[in-house]
Amino acid sequence: MFLELDLQSDVPIYTQIAQQIIEGIASGVLQPGDPLPSVRSLASDLSINLHTVNKAYQALKQEGFLQVHRKRGVIVTPDGMPRVSESFLDSMHLQLRSLAAEAIVRGMTEKEFADACIAIYRRDLTKKGDYLE
Picture (tube, rainbow, N blue to C red):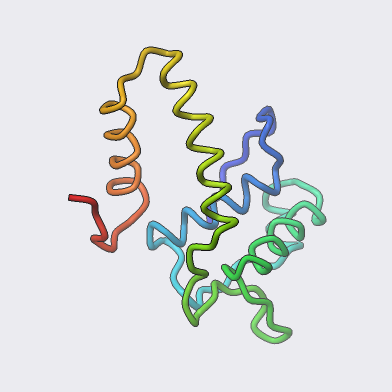
């Protein structure tokens, strides 16, 4: 599994790890049932504290993206991904609102912003064909 961390970012490292694992699932790089490296192994590979990896894995487990088994280790949830919840929608709204505000300040039009969102959804993240038309 290839993760790229930005140690200078304001985004906490555990959040970067969690976001990149979710992106891997969305893009199809990680499939349901795929194993992930152990906490120790990933921490060693990334040269970070194992508690940071554990925090990312626990957050993803709590949300339903990962399962932890004593024998199989950490795996991508094989039984279906978590569904859209009210808390997810609230979080998404806040993030998009912030990005939209910055886009406006930088002179981006509504169409350019919408086109960028659609391009990311279609081209960068999903291979499932669930596109807006």
